[in-house]
Length: 164
Image (tube, rainbow, N blue to C red):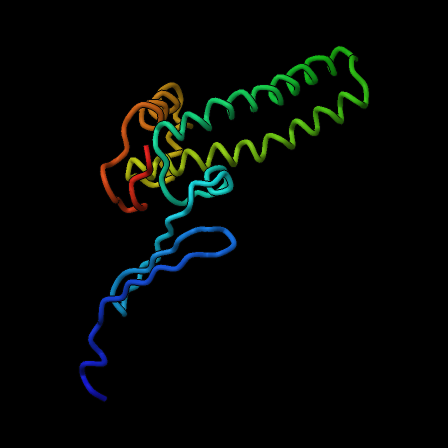
């Protein structure tokens, strides 16, 4: 065997998925390849993927409607819980509120997904989402980091800088 065959060599390959339109770029050396995805800014990726980065503008464009959409099921559940104790509402209200409770799960995932991408834009792990469980200061800290501060310039550990 020739020694040149054992030395690592530089590899760069770009492919595009014809069904989803996402572009994947593989770069690195032959003995240590890294895979990074440069997804198209479609709604499926924006709302459900935890990979990549989003800008503050994209974050707020999803967060505000998400907060409003979360408010309806929350208020409906609150009214149901308060009135059941008073003997009010019937089976129809119970079914409606069960559906509202089920709607909370995808809304929570969407909130997690956009938060994770925003933390990635700040060049921090999505584990920083856990800061929000710290009483009093956690939610405020997350608001400042995700909603007010700019992301890291250029490429970081989580991909290319998002479009503003």
